[in-house]
Length: 207
Length: 376
Image 1 (cartoon, each protein chain N blue to C red):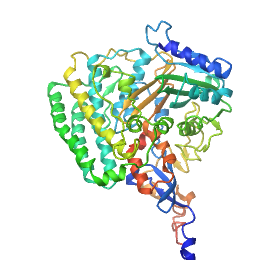
Image 2 (image 1 turned 30 degrees about the vertical axis):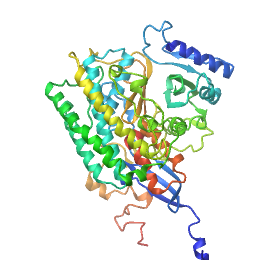
Image 3 (image 1 turned 135 degrees about the vertical axis):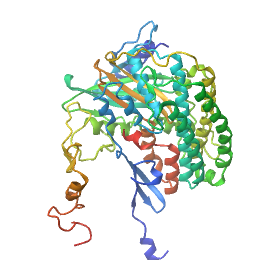
Image 4 (image 1 turned 180 degrees about the vertical axis):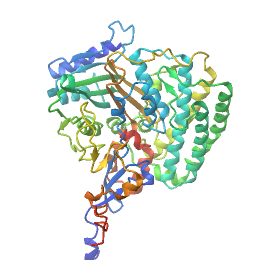
């Protein structure tokens, strides 16, 4: 089957399950199948039907997408959207599919698909961590890569790196020399550093 | 049991393994909830090595990002170079010269053997046998020397470039690789019989932490971990890319020789068998290495047309994927790495229920995760 026919098959099957046809986007495959398209084509479903569409993609026998390769978020501030892109693969049919949806950038929320593919669990935590997409119904929506108190979601295009984190400067030029560092008190808020007045180390077993 | 003893050990004990622990393979922490020696669950805590490599991609041109890809996974940098280059080539519609494709296969298969040396050595070390690790490190050292002669770097190769490869090889280097393969093959047999047949290793790995095929697929395991669970799948054969269709090789699959299909021992044997196949691929690639250019005509300023691709390759750990979005400017608008270790670690909590602590160590080693690839 050519890529165009494969995409049409998936579109028809999902349309049957959802009652509305997903829209085709991206580099449309050449119908003649003569030349490989430059980029990937995708099927887009409304955010409200996301979990339903994912479940159908996995469960319908003619689709059978049992492998979630990747789940990525793409920030598009100029459009005011955050896109969520799932790269799926079916070992049974040896076929790939790109399924995506688009969210309101101001308050991005989406149903979790961790119950559909267990692999989605960590990908969704990363989606929350780096792009700030809230996953409804996720079993354990904590940040994955960054600390819980990290400011903002860095893969947003307008994210600004803070000048410091817990008193630790994030810019090289702002960093002190080793000598100055020893006098600094940046660990003090957690009770591990030295007293700013230069007295006894606080915390510990001294008291 | 005395009344005092009955009160002992009813509650859950929480133990931190890592972030600096020899069995965690990098800076990575497991929070173990245990009842004595038996695990209720082990929760991986990752992110210690998060360097923002995906954010960095948005600030660099396509060519300038290639050295960053080396840092995605220092044990299989060649594949990281390759997947980045292939994704950009697909966006550009660039044809890579055949000699370059062959050189990529040679470099990558050498890298695969080197990676498996570390993987197998670590498995043996984590279940108590230090000696195989040292011997395997020596074999890997020889590959590092070969790759250093090829591109000047021992780990962060920066060899596969957009449109081809960075350096050509001469007859002398090819001879050295052939000599190395002659030297390696008997060692692989010895590794299989002497280490793989060792009673202690067999008992520590056989039947331990079995991953069934549906779990392996559902959690997105790939490569040797997936094949050990009995799923006969290899991108080099089943979604062929580069010049792999011209080369013949077999795809080893777990058979449950010392227990059940998908146990730690299968993840060991599949990797040993894969090294043999890599030797086979290398011999054929050296034999057929065509003459010609090693780099296509790449525009000085790389500006792919707007579009997006998902490019997978069969890395040493299995499918290494890159989702790359271009908006037509000289810098990518989004790059997302899909790594094998990410999936391998995410399944640990699910598998850890009811395992012994010592078996968790065997499980982690057999999955061959590498922390920088998880955290990016």
